[in-house]
View (cartoon, rainbow, N blue to C red):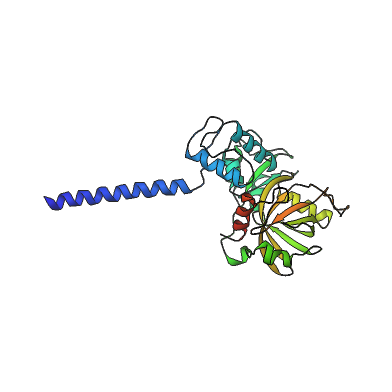
Length: 287
């Protein structure tokens, strides 16, 4: 009798442990449910946290999809070339996870040819974009899933302190090759100034075009995890993609400079560490 009772208690304990473990895993994975104005709960918390980490302020992580979250979602969608409808659906979640690009269909393109180019399937493109037909017109903007390379040392950069290491290697006047971690696109930049972080400019118009492509065709303040290669030494870093302030290169189609942050670097305006930039630095280091 006691043996049967103990057996039942053991089964109950195992089931309870499984339920708790499943709940914990669900809480740590990035949600993919379609969320919109009025949505509430843990998935909205995750959405707000991710947007905040990327520099889109939701003014609180409260699990309530209201005016501020809607504004942050639409700003993110515009920056990534998505339909700015304020709804966090499959395409928006894919972009939030850093696993998508935006591709504009050209004459002669098909879903099959685009899928083959990016190593995905037509069905996945259809799902992400909510398509109802395989026949699409040139000029159609498609969200394309991008497979993320496996985590390996060669994919990530050295997480070096800005003040004692990175600023001493990436000195003013030095040219570096940038690799956008998510898209894999590369372009050259030159550090033109900056004390708390590196103020940089694309070297040529071709480099500007590549950088803009990495941003989905639109400039934005979104933080991107990047690798900064300075004479063969590769650092984990973060950049924004918004031309601002002064410039000293006038034939690169970039009206100003942009910021590159490293570990422990600070903003120039507030002299504070920017959490979103630091999160991107850690991502670029594979942390």
